Each structure stands twice: as structure tokens, then as C-alpha cells.
Image (cartoon, rainbow, N blue to C red):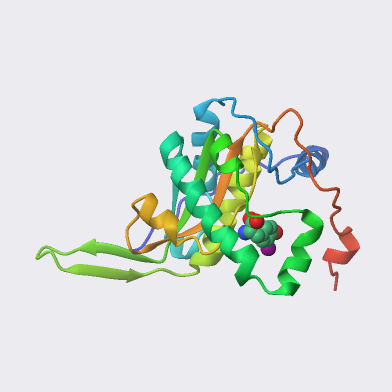
Length: 224
Ligand code: IYR
């Protein structure tokens, strides 16, 4: 199989337009914060589907698009996820995390309570598809190798978070550890593994965030 090449759809923009779009984007992205306090107020479902459409446009290894985005709104499923996540997180905070990790988290003030898993109107669980799984004519299982799954799903998750933020929604990248319970609660096949769990919604009216700062440009960029 060989893809035919077609002309790139590309519209050249004046430099002034490029600069204003670029500055606008930075300014908007600079206001994104991880939110742990959500309102239960519903949000338009299309905001979620558009953001997932955006995530699915991300580049991926060999264009294999090794991801599934599971959207959870059912209160009973959210309750099961919270219960399982809190059980794992409690074990982690109380027994599994080494002291250095607890020290690194202490300034953020997180603990094992994950109320937001039931309060946020949407949970999006991003699954990585580690390998392709299909059946041949005789019902035999066929596995196909996937390339750069971690990188691809990470990039798609970045697109997703940016799209949700620009739609005025609050998000949290949550990774209850270990996350295997999501595979069973959500009934995903054996070739899929949870990558990140993202509560999505409006922030609570009294939501607070830790007063953190981001590194300056000269700390993150190297010019040669
Ligand atoms: N998964 C835990 C712990 C945690 C780990 C990191 I690294 C964070 O940046 C924040 C939290 C939790 O969600 O509490």
C-alpha cells in the first residue's frame, strides 16, 4: 500500500497575522491551569466531541492513530471509577510512594481524595492502543505492531487539553496509579491500556489553584 501524494492545502499568511495569532495563542494557553475543583453544571456535549476530534487529528507513528477516548457521563460509572481510584491512591499515598515523591507533591497539597471524579460532568479516559488486534478469516487472532505509541498518545492528549481549554473548559491530567481498573470498569480490550484520565467541566465558583509559576523562556529554550 502506498499513499498517493496530493498538494498540501496551505494558505500563506502575512507575517503580521502570524505574529498576532501566535501571541494570542500563547496568551490563551498561559491561562490554562490544572483544576481539582469542578462544578457539576453540564456543558455542551459538542465541546467534548469537537475536542476529541481535534485530538484525533494529532500526528502519530506511521499514522496508526493508536488511541481511544472513552467519554464517561454515567454517574454510576463515575462512582465506580472514583471508588477504585481512591482505593489505589490511598494505598499509594499511605504505602507505595517513596518519601521523595511525597515531598515533591507536598507543595501541591494533593491527597488520595478524588471527589472531582464524581463532580465533573465528563471524564475522558485516554487509552493507548499498544498493538492492533484483529481476526483473520479462520478466526485466528492477528496482532500488528504499533510504533511510538507513548509519543503519539502524548501529543494527542496535548491537542485535547488545548482544545478543551480554548473552549473555556477546565481539565485535570489525572493518573491514579496503577490505572488498570479503568480497563475493566470501561470494558476495554487487552491491547488497550489507560494513558490518562481527564475530568472536564466548568471550574467550581470557588475553585482555587496552587500559586505556581512556569519556567522562563531562557530556562526551557536553548539556541545554537
Ligand atoms: N496520582 C496522584 C499523585 C500525583 C502525582 C503527580 I507526579 C502529580 O503531579 C500530582 C499527583 C494524585 O493524583 O494525587
